[in-house]
Each structure stands twice: as C-alpha cells, then as structure tokens.
Length: 372
Ligand code: SF4
Image (cartoon, rainbow, N blue to C red):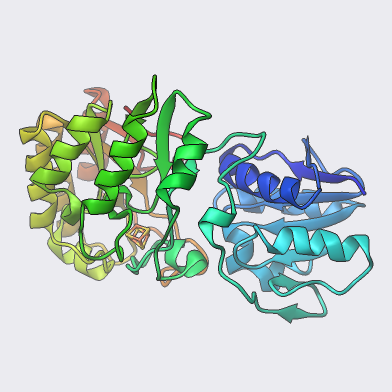
C-alpha cells in the first residue's frame, strides 16, 4: 500500500512528526505535490487549508485530512475527504492506515461521512519523537492552560500542558547544530503552564549545554514566551546557556482592555516588566501583537499603536492581523477595519525596520518571523 503526504509548506512540522509516527508503524511516506495513489494524507491549517479543498474533493485516490482546520471543521470536511483525523494524529494516522490495509473500520479519532468515534487517547510526547528522517522542530511541550479567544492550541491539544523529557529532547537535539524548541510558552517547560518555575528549564538547558558544538535558542520562534514568565532569573538563564540575542514575547495587544477581552490572562504591566527584564539582561525584545480584533475599539487600536511605537525604541514588533480561526470563540467573526492613523503608524514602523509581519494580510502570519 503506497502512502503519500501532500507537501504543504506551512505544515512542515506536522509532516515531520506524523511521518516519524508512520515510519515507526512501518509506513514510509512519499512526499508528493498532489494526490497520488493509493492514499494521500493532508494536514491543513485554517488559513491556507481551504485552498486545498478543490484538490481533495476532485482526487480519485483515498484522501485523509487532518491538522487544525480538520479538527475544527471535520463535519464539513467529511463531505470532501474520505477520512478526517480529528485531534492528535501520531496514534490515529497509523491506526487508520492499519485499518485501511485490513479493510477494518476506522479507529477512534477518525470521522467519515457515516461514522465518528471521538479520540480515545492523549499523545505522550516521549513516545513520539518530533521527527524521524524528515526533520522538524523539537517539540518540548504541548497543550496550553490558557484560553485566548483567537487561538486554536488549547482547543486542539487540551488545557493540560504536557512535556517531553530532558532525555528525549537531548536525543532529538543531536540532529541539529542550532537547537530550537516548539512550545506554546518555552519558559513553561516542566510546569503546569500557569506558575513559573525555572527548575526544569534550567536542568534542560544545563543538560543540552553539555552536547558539544551546539547553539541553543530559547524564547525565539517557534517557541515564544508569555510575558509573566520573563523574570530577571529567567533572562539570566537564557544569557548563560543560549545563543539568541533577542527574546520573543507574546503580548498581542497594547491595550489593557483588549487583553481582558481576548482572555490573555496577563496585564500590560506584565508585558512592560518582561520587556525591562530583557533589556536589563542585554536582550532585544521582539513583541508579538495582533490588530483588528472584532470588538477592538478605535481607542484600543490607537493604544496598541502607541505601545508599538514605544517598543520600537528599544526592540521590534511582529504584527499580525486578526484571523477568525475555526474552533475558537472568535470563529465566524470578522476582523474590524483599521483606521487610517493605525495603518499609517504601523507602516512607518515597518519602513523604519522596527516592525515586521503583516497587519493587512493574515495569510502571511505563518511565514514571517524574526528569529534570532
Ligand atoms: S495564544 Fe498562547 S497562551 Fe494563549 S491560548 Fe494560545 S498557546 Fe495558550
């Protein structure tokens, strides 16, 4: 049975971890640029995913669709794909391939036009390397206890944060010169995700620093940090063990009232404290923000612009435009228009080189990040 994986640039990390899971189960995936026999697997995110719908619908091979978009929109996708993987795929995809091989029924976690049994497990990260032959980022933690209203992460991976062991991370790190971590909040490693505790991250960094000829990057893409986890001690740890000169912090708004509306679970003062700790420790802060939330007022937008202008004096801003991701509380809402003052101020910051990303085109959000 030939099993193919449809190459989609934004889904490289899913490709890495699922091809590793399939390899372990005895299925070697072939990477393809369109549907091919016998089976073609797709991982779709909610921004670029919809553009693959016609291809999947017209495919005359068995199609299996998963990823964030499939988790949120499986009831629609069962009408165009043969199988939809709802939830984490590391166990479910190999089980589905086994059942296709033996003509058995689809396993839990798979929806079809005629059946759906919810997933019956949670993935244990140590049992599933982040990648095999095809390399991806080292995923150190999965799941998030916060509930930001625009974010799919806790809705797909749950509210309990799980961590990969130091031993497992160390083994994966052998494959790289630059060690980078995938995490919803890199400084939350080893914690419940809510209460900062540096003991585990310290042990991890100390252990990784013993591997010769490696550069460790912590608090950079793809594992930015929540502001309330950035302390003087945390910055000292990064300075001691890591090679990055920048620390990437998720703030998402410069207006206190917007932070409350989007349920960020931290204050603007937390953001400024984090920025101060970064600069005191010799790091350049890079601050993530989103503009155009549906209920954001003109005043709140202007507060965020002022915040960005302040940040730009000492660091960088990475801006996104709000996008209503399915499966989140803000699904189905529309990004509000940006007033001319906001467009012009953000444009000026971009021209000065202090702001990157795209506040006008949400589709660019997955493809441009400052990383060092
Ligand atoms: S944006 Fe970050 S902190 Fe908020 S729910 Fe998503 S992963 Fe968690």
